[in-house]
Length: 196
Image (cartoon, rainbow, N blue to C red):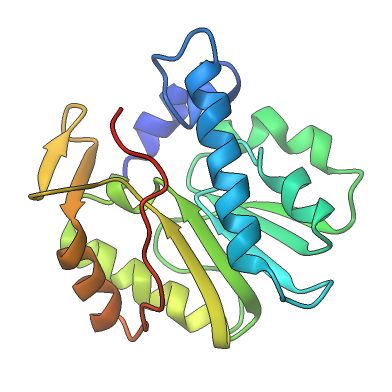
């Protein structure tokens, strides 16, 4: 995991720090954020109010208000304190939400404590496959039995490194195989956006 990369990205404003740093006008990032919210809301449908939702790799915590508005207890973790600090002061007043810095190794939660976990574009930044396998097992540890995991990731027809090796776009079925090896059951897959 590239903590230094994310600390550097924290110098950008808004969604440019965590989505597309090249989107200076914000139109693409607004669409990406809309797509994230639409798909995560659909995946969380039917989950009881006050269920606990972990956003793994929350960046600035910009999804917090969205998750809290759905009636869920939000916890966001990220490896970069600098990213968390850009939004963390706004979250303090909301007792239903928490942001924490994560060391990249072990989540600071007891086993089976989250009803749902979601990520957006995080796993592709874990370029070492053995580290990704450990991260997925750690996520599987903290989810409740029959909990929901939502992974929104860029895939490619063949695995490749991109953006100066800061991300690895994996082949879809290879990524699914990695999920299954971590003890997860893939219930659904869908394309939510094509192209760049």
